[in-house]
Image (cartoon, rainbow, N blue to C red; front, side):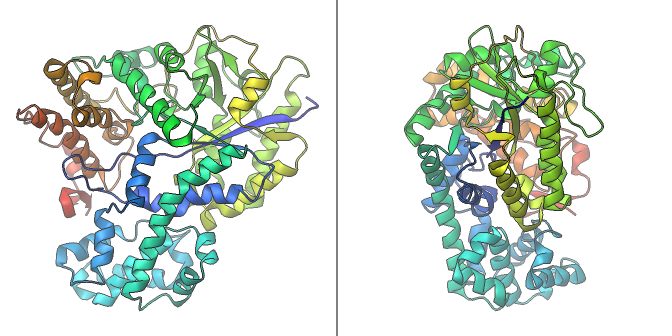
Length: 554
């Protein structure tokens, strides 16, 4: 290929829906903290490279949470941060802070700040005995936790934040208030900056099903057997295609209200697709969707080969858009490039990492024929969690990457809808495999014994709601929202044996709380098994209670 290879970068912005349906408080702080470290800054950094075009997702339920924070919502960590400068903490509150307020990469973040590192070393010496620490220790810890969750560039550009970082200790009430106020401003500003960059033609904003469900499993959970014939499924299938359609329709409607235009593209949650979902995407008025190279390979019955450098040997299979029989367009991500950004490049020198990525792209480009396009290389991954694994929040890597792509005449970055409109696909994909971005199946979300109880509880609650009120669209707003939240992918992710976190029990409790709301709204008692933890009992070993019923490693 002699011309420029179009490159589509899609950064996926998503967090679970952390608002408790019974208290309306946020049970975990990660939306607020990612807003101050990643959401706003990813868009701000892109502005330094006006010749680079990038695509972002903005999950509707994420934007809802950002707006709540901008309007003054709190989470437990916000309240504890303020209590350190307003009242004496009780032992339980101190214990929570000791456990939670070092929750950021120790090597890439905490070790970069001498005073924050000193607080961590004191904790390690004291053996997590909060009664040994002074009140000033907790004030400093509260400010450092929230300051460290801000992008280093944003700290440097704010004279007051930079001064706090330099001084490092003996913080005051007003200084803590200032940091928390800056976080609220970042949460408020992020969606507006994305919108402005889209109007200016540098960004395209994709949508995602409203509460991030695995759409094929809402249509019919037995779809999992297509790609994983030995999957262990619940006795009663979850089969509510109306719910999958509604999650898409509401996402499209929300996007139009929030950004002033209908979205044209969608990243189905976790890249999870099926023929039925492709039809729902078209019915929702969306033009194209994206998934993983494994789904493409299974769809065409071919294996994608790579050379010793992990560059594609047959890039003409992956580096192109496809048309489906129903009229939808589909693109598929280069898994190696996407996953190396997400999981490998953070441990490399930024120059070497970008050189590796560009080299892989260049070798694949050289193998593309002159005829037979249009071509499109797609890099799609999480746009928030990767950067904690990089020094300087990934800024050095991103600046080198964007700078190289802007200057290198072999490539051009594109907004996907704009590119597909000018270069519609010429090859039809006769069948679409049912799978996701992980192993081209749904095993992370269904198919294991640990998933079964959760899917059975969801199906039982959804069927109960159907008997009480009829279709999803006829249900009371609170009931409908609780069910849609409970359909989200994140709860089932954490029920998987492959995944665990210090907040496993928080996720379990929040999932069940949304189910309980449905029963209580109808004046019925939730079944006992829904009111009890659904986690595999073996996961209880080694855990100790934390505030709010959460469990943390002991």
